[in-house]
Length: 639
Image 1 (spheres, rainbow, N blue to C red):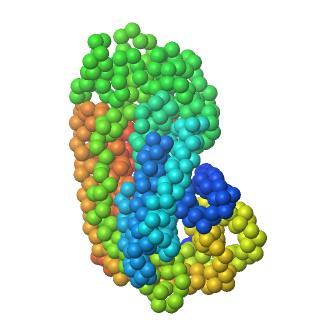
Image 2 (tube, helix red, strand yellow; image 1 turned 60 degrees about the horizontal axis):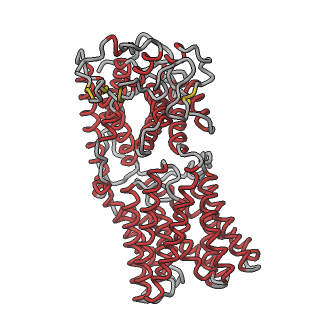
Image 3 (cartoon, one colour; image 1 turned 60 degrees about the vertical axis):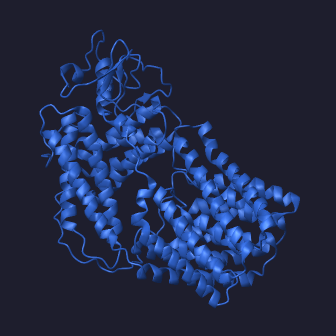
C-alpha cells in the first residue's frame, strides 16, 4: 500500500497552465459510434429538405438530429430514458427561444434570455450527469433560434420538425442494442479491468501508483453504475458483475492479482463473443486452460459450462439459492441467511444432494456478489439534491454568457449568440479546467475558421455540396473531439458556419471575422466571469466527503472486528467505502483547481485515503475473494 507522506496544508497556487492543454490523447474506444450516429441522424432529414427545396428549415431538423450525440456510454435501458429527456429538454429550450424571438426583436432581451437558458441547461445537464456533449449542443440550438426570424404562427411547425427528428435520433441511438444488447456494459467493464490491471502492475507501491489507483477506482465505480442502471440482471450481466469483483480485488490487493489475467478478460469483452468467466477457482477445479486464455460464460442464461453439471453454474445460482445472501426453502419461501452463518458448508459450497466442484463454485459466486441486491433496491439519490453545489457554476454561466453577448452587441457583431455559446462552453468543474477549455476553444475555433475559408468555395457549388460538407464536418467533429476538445472544435466551427448558410448565401469573409471576434470575446469575458464568481463551497464539500469516507471506514472496521459478521453487511460496507473514496478523490481534484478559498486539508485527505484502502484490503481478505497470488501479508490491512 501507499507510504506517501502527507503534505502540509497550504493555500492553493493560482496557476493557469498551458503545458499539455493542447496535447492529443488516445481516441475514444467508440468514437466511430457517435460519429456514425450523428451522420445517420442528420443525413435523411437534410436530404429530404434538399429534395423539397426547403433547406431553410434545416436548422430545426438538425436541432432534433443532434440529440443522437448523447448517451453512447449508457446501457440501453438507461439510454432510452436519457435520450428521451434530452429530446424533451431540447424541445423546451427551442420552444422558449422561438416564442421569445417571435415576441421581441430587442437584441439585449434576446441575449439575456439566451444567458438564462444557458445557465439552466448547464445546471440541469450537470445535475443529471447526462454526459458529453453536455449543455453545449442544447445551448447552441436555443441561442441560434433566438436570432432566427420568427412569428408565433410558425412556432408549432418548427417545433414539430424538431420533435420528429428528435424521435428519429432516439431510434438511431437505440438501434445498436438490437445487435449487441450488452455492449455498453461490456465496454465499461473492460475499461475497469484495464485500469485495475494498470494499478496491479504497480504492485501498489510503484511510481505513479496513487494516480493510477484513483483512475482505476473511478473506472470501477463507473462500471458498477453502468451495470446498476442496465435493468434486469441477466446471465451476461451477472458474469460482468463477477469480473468487476476481480477489478475491485485488484484495487484492494494489487500485489495479489495478475495484471495479464485482467487484461485478457478485458480483451475478450471487446469482441462479440461470450462474457469471460471470472472464477479462478472454477478454472482450477474444472481444469480449464491457462490464465492467458480466459474461460467464458455463455450468453444464454439457462446453459451450463462443460464439466459443471449444475443447472445454474453460469449464473452463480444453485437450485434453491437466490443471490445475494438469501436462499429459497423447498416450499418457495425466501430464507435470509442468519448472522454469522458462513459455516463450513457455505464456504465450500456443500449442500445436500450436490457434489463438488460445481456446488462449491456456485456458492463462491454467491458470496462475492453479496449486497448487490440491497444496492439495487436502495433508492437512487435524486438529481435535484445536486443543484445546491452547482449554484456558483450556474451564476458563472449566466453572468459570463450575458456579458459576452452584450460586449458582442457593443462591437457590432451580427450574431452575438456565438459569443454566448463560446462562454457557455467554457465552464467546467473548476477554474483551472475552465481556463484549459478556454484555450482549447479559442485555438480550435481560430483554426476552424481557416478551414472554413478553405472549403467555402466547394460548399458554395450548390445546395447538395453544402449538405455533404456539413455531414463531413459532423463526422469529423465526433471522430476527433475525444482526442482533444480543440481538435473537435476545428470541425465544429466550419459546421456551425455552414448551418447559417442553409437559409441563404452568406459572405464568407464577414462570417470568418464575426466568428473569430465572437470566439475571443466569449472566451475572455467568460473567463473573467469565472474568476469573479467564487466557489468557496468547494472546500466545504471536501470536508463533507472526508466525513463520509471516515464514517464508511468506521462501519467497515466495526464489521471486520466482529468474529461472525454478516457477509452481506460486510460486502455492503466495502462497496460503500469504495464509492466514498472515489467521491472524495473527485471532490478534492475539483476543489484543487478553484481560487479564493481556504487551504484544503491535504494531510487529512491523504490519511483518509490510506486508511480507507487498507480497510478495503482487509475486507477482501476477510471475505476470501479470489486472488491470483496468495501472499501472506498485505501492508496495513489492519482496520
